[in-house]
Amino acid sequence: MGIAASLFFSSNDTEKQTLHRRITPSAEQMQEQQDRWNELADHVMADLKSETGCPIRSWLQGSYKYHTQIRPPRKGDEFDIDLGIFVCWPGQAETGPQKPNDLRTTLHISLQAYAASTDGVRSVDNPPKPRCARIHYDGDFHIDVPIYHLDPDADERTLAAAGGWEISDPKALYLWFKSKFDDATRARVRRQIRYLKCWAALKWRIDDGRPCSVLLTVLAAEAFVRLRDDQIGADDDTLLALLREIANRIARGRRVRNPANPGEDLNCLTDQQWAAFSKGLNDLIGTAASAIASDDEIEAADYWSRAFAHFFPMPDFRAAVATDGVAKSHALIPITLPDVFVRAVGKRNPNIKLTGKNEIGPIPKECSIIFEIVEPWKLPSDTTVDWMVRNEGDEAEYINDLGHRAGNGFAATESSAYTGTHYMDCILRQNGRIYGVRRIPVRISGMNAPLRNPVASPSWTNVRARR
Image (cartoon, rainbow, N blue to C red; front, side, top):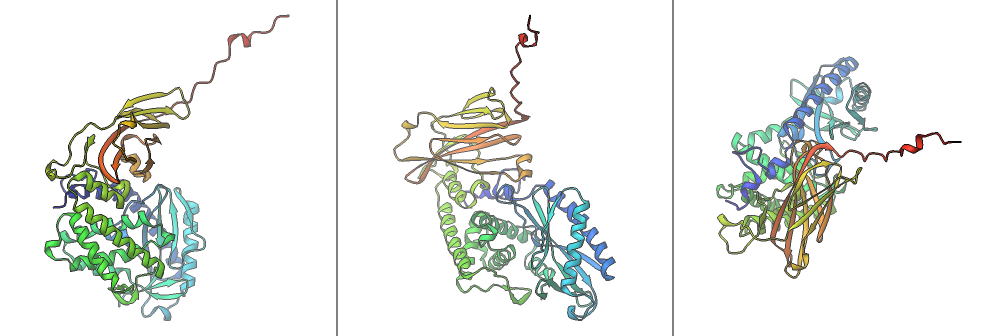
């Protein structure tokens, strides 16, 4: 079993801070999304039935349907949900009573009316995207709404796109995915897809050539089928084997066929973007191989953090060293690391001043927090220091702010924003290799820092001047 397997996934403790736990939407977020798309589907279906006179159906699709949705990689990014709307008539789309642009216009008008009358809706994209409409909600998520023709008897779907009718059947692809694996194996594959999507989302923004979700899903599913039984085990070992199989596949060519429609190429990347994806994948394989080969959990976690940043958890310790030659079962060795002095100062009220050594709190929200290594000149020569924020708790999860890199050097400054216990990880390296970590708990109360009281006017200012 991979040395960092327990940091990827825990089947016994669903609340443990693992990579899978941290990249998966919370139950509250999933419920909110479900409530919203159910409400939206009811509105749009009623509108389109009235306008077209045709039977209307809806079908949830995409990552939510596949159970591979991931948390947005950065605060302010959005969850993506796909809600298909199907206008039904018998026969081919081209011979029916509705034209693709007419359906797209009717859908767009319906979404605008819904947005104008519904709390919690931020906006509707205008103009719509070439293959769907998009509506944005508070809570950092949007719903993409593609509209299709459905021939109920043939169970065939055709997408109403900006350029006309397109052969596209999301249900067929989902049924292909579901039929490839039994329930237990499918759960494994879904986790691997989430890891792959998280890495891609952290490495590329959507407009900068990020591989789309369906491309990564098909590549991962097809690669998993090709793995030998001895390559499938703990999630970290399995991920390395899966990445190598995907790399072998994409080296054979850039075309990735839709298994449910072999005439469709799922790869929408440009040649330059495809080359960047291929190189990024090979770099990830190198990182994963180094993590698997690590002698201890600390070093392995550090390697995996290069791919998954703040989403990858550190082991549960306060001070530890990564030591070559130590048995893996005794990888975490408490040592004397440099102390970190921590002080918090209220942003709105600088009279609030709290301090701590190697921890702080409880402190109110809206404080600046300064972390400083004590006596840094005593560190081994060539030591470099990296700082990583890893947030936990319901409030940080709902805001989709589970952390970030906090810079390097002997000091770092952050802010208190979310109730709960969070961590600043102080990572020490020599010649680029990790040799120690100090985890600094930051306990934040639910209170906001109060405003500084205004200076009271002296009593004599209210006395009428004598004549």
